[in-house]
Length: 265
Ligand code: HEM
Image 1 (spheres, rainbow, N blue to C red):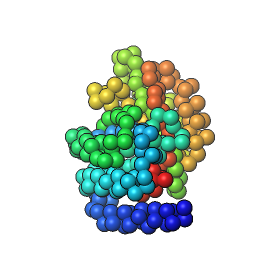
Image 2 (image 1 turned 135 degrees about the vertical axis):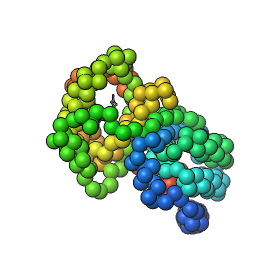
Image 3 (image 1 turned 180 degrees about the horizontal axis):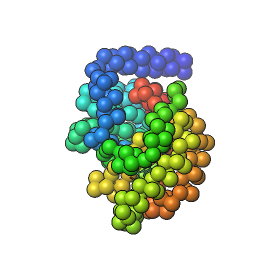
Image 4 (image 1 turned 90 degrees about the vertical axis):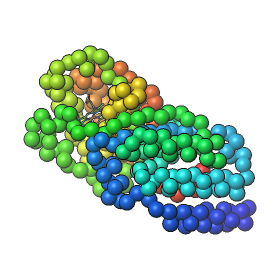
């Protein structure tokens, strides 16, 4: 037993050291992909099949090495984040969040992933696409609200990630911009107490998916996130949501190496 654990640790370490040399998208480019408008964001959630855990350890490690290689190869062009959903979500085991300038680059990554030896064990649970855009309502908001929105979130790790897809009703889209802006101001004011503990990112999905938005959050305080949702359920904009979640994906933010170690076990 102790022999197999030590072999396991050494092999995983070798795999990680070897592949750590692989080039990745420059930090500046990653920052741009994660902050600028006009970037495609894809959320791809997968479950591992029952055969995965039945394979011998060296086979699992070899397949995870392939996973690492596929991710590192595509990280030259795009930002790829990974999350562990297993244990917290019954929807999927792992989630990839991919940011790319072209959706077809994301497609190539997902094709390479799914056709790899590791990918043969994956079943797709959800794939959702969105586009980052300049703020629609914030420019017309009072200066004090704009200043509050600039307050960045508290430093320190935010281990939890939550993804909630949203579709709004035709009534919402039929409203005048002024009416929608007033409701989004109320939405923002209700959310303001949570700006420091809940980091957020919005993706516009209309026409790219059966959705209007993908909302993505990171926090270390899930209780605050829960209170935030309760606060938003009280604002006038909320009843215009036709779909909220379905699925709501909740997991923990992990490095690729951490995911590999967990899945190898
Ligand atoms: C820290 C908490 C939050 C803050 C400060 C916040 C703030 C904002 C702001 C300022 C906008 C307008 C963006 C624009 O100008 O285009 C917005 C849009 C939006 N927010 Fe939030 N929000 C928060 C949390 C949430 C949560 C928890 C949800 C739902 C799960 C949510 C769903 C949305 C959606 C769907 C939009 C787009 C609405 C539309 O354009 O019709 N937000 N939010």
